[in-house]
Structures are given as C-alpha cells and as structure tokens.
Image (cartoon, rainbow, N blue to C red; front, top):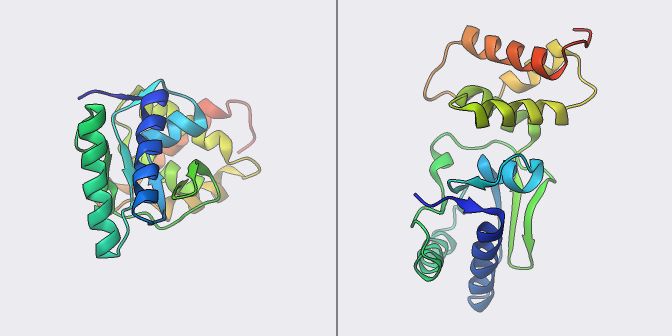
Length: 183
C-alpha cells in the first residue's frame, strides 16, 4: 500500500474539498491516528491512511465515498486512503485541534486524552509508541494518576486488552516522557 506523505495527503484532501464544493456539501469530520501524527505532531513523514468518522447522513456519506474513490483513481491512491475504519469503535470526542481546513472540508482531531487511549491500546509499533509519548507531552499540567483516569475512560472495548496491560503501557510512557517528574 502506497503511504501518504504530507504533500500527497494535502493534495488528496484539497482535491476532495474541491469536489465537495462542486457538490455544494460541507463536511466537518473527526479524525485520529496517523494523520494527527503527520499534520499536528509532525512525528512522521507518511501515514498509511486517514482514519475518520464518516457522516451519519446517508446522502453525505454516499457522496463522500464516491468522491474518495474519484480522488483515489485520479491520484493513484488506495481506495481506502480516507476511510471510516475507526467507526467500529467510534470516537467520543471532537477537539479544536484542526488537522486540515478548507471551506468545504474540516478535519478535527479527537481530544488528546482519547487519542492517547487509542495509541496505548494499539501499541503496535515504534511509531505508535512514539506518537503516544508525544501525545502524552501535549497533556501538560496533569498529575499522573489524574491523567490516567481521564485517559482510561476512553480505552477502546474491542479488541479487548486487560486493564493491567493498559496501565502498564501508560506507566511506561509516563516514565519515558517524564523521567524526573513527581508522580
């Protein structure tokens, strides 16, 4: 699968926004994952895809899916370059962290606490762990236990990981991000 660089992702999103404009449709969607790492944290050079919550409105959703395919064909991208794969576990929050902005398309990240919970849950690669550490650093001013309680409430249900494993991963990240900070 061809990865999306910052440049390609911006071009694809701009093209999608232009097509939405042609269809007189505005979308404001919540995103998570690699796109936040790419555009906001600037911790990666590329991402596999853009994970978003698609609109519940069937007309808007169908139009979006059609336009995603059109952009994929035009730019020789995977059909899933923008997808709703995170919809199965949902995102509960939407923040003011604007990842991409166009008059017809706005992508906003979920809140840092929720993004951290999902990264702690995933913990698949060095990229996930590094992203989790960077997200943790965005959450300044919290004591460890208070922050853990805020993050834990967003722990995904599926696939299940034990609470102890989630706590262990949080502790590891905290110790790496704040080696000398009082607990």
